[in-house]
Length: 145
Image (cartoon, rainbow, N blue to C red):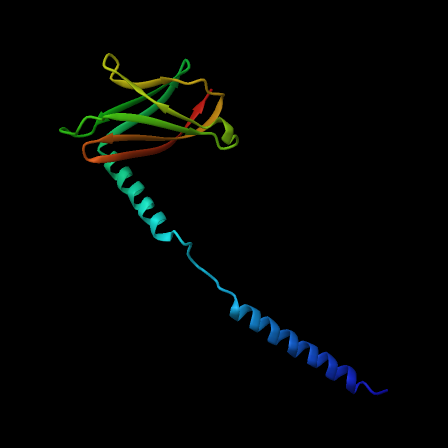
């Protein structure tokens, strides 16, 4: 039997296939970064700076009897007073329950608090605040019984 034409046709197919793959891969535009890479990088850097500024305070987040409380104390005096405190709660397994709470300050207890009907389980939070130096951020996790 003459297998010469079968071998050449198979070889021809393999060569054409490889040339086609090389041509397709070479002409495809692979972007290693997104179009808004620098904007994302600046936002990330702002978040890092906000966390560093927040290190001047001691933060304690607790949940008691339907109230979320954030106790903030300055680690060293003089530290500027906080102007606002916002608590963003996210639930890892149910994004429909995510909440953003504006906390109110109580001079009696020296705490920021807000009523929040939370289901039991794990919640991730980010405490965001503002003082005269800029924005502050403290991420964390709280378990609601």
